Amino acid sequence: MFKENAPTGGQVMTKVIMSMVTLVTLSFGLPQAGQTQQDSTTTMLRALLRRLDSLERVVADLRASQRDTTQTTDEVAALRAAARAAVGDAPSNTTPTEGQSRTRNLQILNPEISVTGDVVGSMSAASQESAAFRGTPREFEFSFQTALDPYTRTKVFITREEDFEIAGTPERETPAADGSGPVQEAPGFEIEEGYMYWVGLPGGFGAKIGKFRQEIGLYNRWHTHALFEVERPLAATTFLGEDGLIQTGASIVLPTFTFGPATQSLTFEVTTGNNDVLFEGGSQMSYLGRFQNFWDVSNSTYLQLGATGVYGKNNDVDLESRLFSLDIALRWNPGQGSFRDVQLKGEWYFVQRDRGIESLSGNGGYLQANYRLNRQWILGARTDYVEFVDNAPNILQFAPSVTWWQSEWVRVRLQYNMLRPAGEGANHTLLLQFVWAMGPDKHATY
View 1: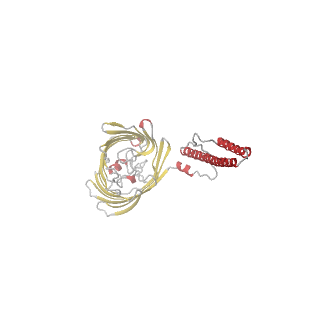
View 2 (view 1 turned 60 degrees about the vertical axis):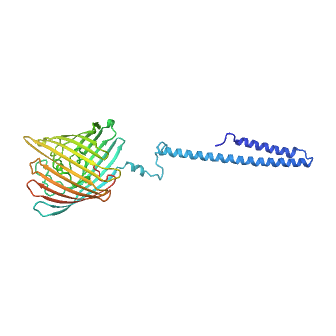
View 3 (view 1 turned 45 degrees about the vertical axis):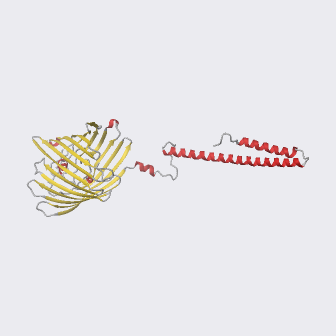
């Protein structure tokens, strides 16, 4: 920037011209009559030359300043253009130019893809029988997740599952629709879940539609490879089947509210009641409601209590089913970078199935404890108890386990199951589980 009293380019040139005129006048108009006059003229010429040199330096400085100002202006303009491009305000050319790549734009449209593997080796010894070893590729899961738009998301889980045996567990066969006998299911890929859900709805509501794991208890929403033990609790598999309660319909979550020291939430779901165990593969509607309380006991401890009710019919076999469950979870985590963690959980199910004049009921549940020693090691134990709805013997099971997280992607678990039906001998099973995952959805519980 120039100072206010700095001469402009025009003023400088005017002074230069006036100096030259003065020089010419002195050179030709002055009298030549004496040495004194000549000395005076020489002195004046020298002064004029010095003044001319000074003016030339001023002109050079002005020109340099003008060049710097232009360069600075160009740099500011470039920065502004870069800022507009960064926030998307800069005008864009939608016509692809030669050699321009659209790979990064297409990458944004691709879903997040994850793959999980779960292989179990088992050595089982049923009561009064010899031990048998078996390796089972229990589950392979492909997960696809993406944002459809600013308001909706979608998740699709495609799985291939194969069951393995826990010694002493009663066999549960799924009857065929025509009554010809049990269904023989071969392992194959199927859609475990596929649903769309809304986020940011007015008032804090949540909504979901599609095929999904329903909100019952503590673990039904969890995928099998993410459980604290190798298999699901015995009560859950007895009353809901090996895979849990997975049906097609709609779910709505009401806004959370606070009453006293706790935060409450309500969930309602309407689905097709086709669960093979609870509804025997029906096609009528089933209804689920869940109420949940959450307390922050302290900065490191929380307590959760929940209650769930399920009701549905299957008119094809004149069946009406009701299920009610209670669950509790207590967790202690000191935080602040510590990997120590203690979790205590429990659930209890009550089931009633009415078929005409016949009514069967049963109940059962579990207690579970898990203690994380550090980043890699977790100790756990679970006790199950079940009274079957089909008047089978009551069953007691104890399952301790130790889990080693080799890394975020690889997990190894050793588990022992001791299962004893009432009035019978104990059955023993030793399980070694390997779980690995790749992609952003590593060992996701939901």
